[in-house]
Image (cartoon, rainbow, N blue to C red; front, side):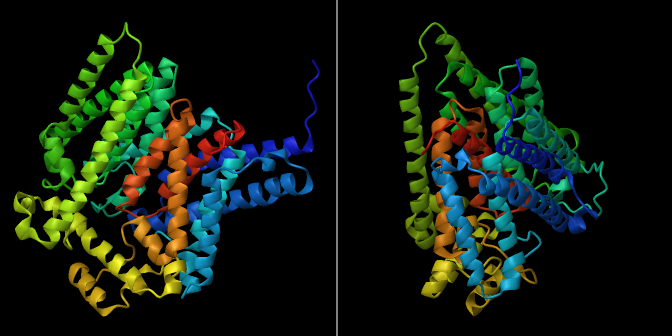
Amino acid sequence: MKPKKKSTVQVIHEYGELLTTIYLVVMLAVLPLFYHNGYSDIANAKYKMYRLITIVFVVICGLICFSAETGMFKCENLRKRPLVPVSCVIIHFFSNLISWIFSSDHKLSWIGNGSWHMGFLSQLLFLLSMLLVFYYFKNRIIIWAAAGLGAGITGLLTVLNRFDIYPLDMGNKYPGFISTLGQTNWATMYVACLMGVGIGLFINEEKLIKRIIILLVDALIFMGAWVVGSDTILPVIVAELFILLGICLKKREYMKRFVVILSVLGVVTEVIYFLVFEFFYDRFVFVDENDAVNSLLKKQIGVWFIVVAALIFMLISLMKNKEWGSNILTNLYKLMVAGVLLSVIFIIIAMVAVTNTPEKAGALANVRMLRFDYDWGTHRGLNWRCAVYGFARMSPLRKIVGTGQGGFEAYIYSFQDLSDSLHEMYGKYKLMVAHNEYLNFLIENGIIGCLSYMGFMISSFSLLWKRAGESRLSLMALLSLSGYIACSIFFFQHVYATSFMYIFIAMALSEVRNAGTAL
């Protein structure tokens, strides 16, 4: 049969798909491993690499392929109703533009403050590249091979570095930095995104050989997570497993694979315990025996993962001759969600009581986590208070548009009382971000920037949740987003964490769009 001749629009679109695939492979396999001049310049190196490859992608794929496809020819794809998350991205794009226009320092706002360079330029690259991936993404195995390569090698390097083994010469061996991932916060966000993708990929893979390969990569990511050096990895693990459980309850086969993930996590956790506290304790870098991660390791939390996995497997085995009770299990999960929400509300109320009236809080006053003072959460108590007080003191216009990207530090330190508190806590070092993305957006991008960003996150989560039981890409993006959200409460944006969050969601939304589904 004679092949049908392709139209000019189809040819251009296929070039766009090819360019998008190349971009994703470079992003996933090269950017996480790229460094220059070791630790001393790793943040700048990451930013320059990200800026280079993304500008090239946006210019060639956007200005040439997309413009030609949609400008010179009639394009049916653009007639589809845009999804709510994509609409939020477009609104967020314009909110960033408004914040930059009204910025008190346009040069600073363009590049951003600090070595992570989260200025107007980076925000534009995040959003423009996401929109192009959304439009041109085509699911190819090479993309996931690249993701596995980047995540697997960085996971292995993280473990080796924590035991003072450096296959790559990164210069000074400072414990706050991790091989090619750099600063601990950035590394944790990267792990959060890629761990969710790896878990979702395993759950949906039907071929045994591929599942085993994916599971081995996931094991390396789990190991890296336990030694990454941040307590924030705990809410990340809890968030991703809890969301995964809600999806897997819908199918018996998914629950079996959930048991496998939980078992592997338990085994890996115990391996890390023995490496850290039994075999190589004297070589382990960055040990704080009082932090939550090491405390849980010493309490054999890995064994409990394995026990829970065994109990779930027994339950599945007992129900093998019965119809899978999805309604009962779904209702049970809803009760669990309600319990989590009530627990969060109780914790917040308890924190208010312990912090303001400890004499009336009784035994709760002795729970350190509930005392929201300046030292809470590695000084996040002070950071968040300064952000809230600073926002309250803004003029009405600034509350709406913000100070401009990168303006957090200059604005907060303009108040003598806040400056004194920060100087007393940090000495010669400066607080450059709120260590909470939403508070940071309130200060730098104002209410419209914060709401458009939250709108994107919430609408994406809602749409992905609805499709995750039937769609591999949606499950992968949902878990990645869940881990990122857990991080975003305590951390701040960075090029190889935030960009991946946007990209994975774009991939899943592309599938939704092509399927003709709308929210």
